Image 1 (cartoon, rainbow, N blue to C red):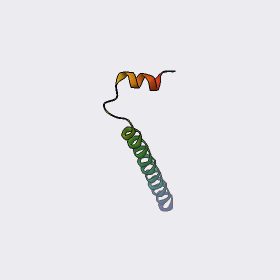
Image 2 (spheres, helix red, strand yellow):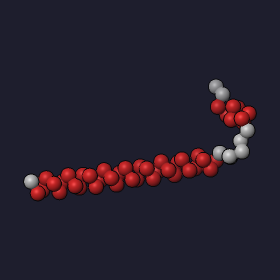
Image 3 (cartoon, rainbow, N blue to C red):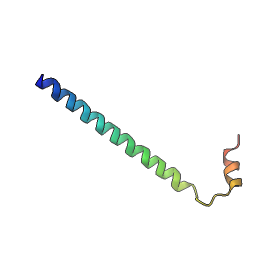
Length: 52
């Protein structure tokens, strides 16, 4: 049973690392999108960008 517990701990560690790396990538993308958008955009500018 000791080996099985080590395998489970290893899988949990790999899952935690994968989640941490994905979260880091998501934050970078989110930060880049937020930096590209000005805080002072007018409603008209928003409407022109998002209308279909």
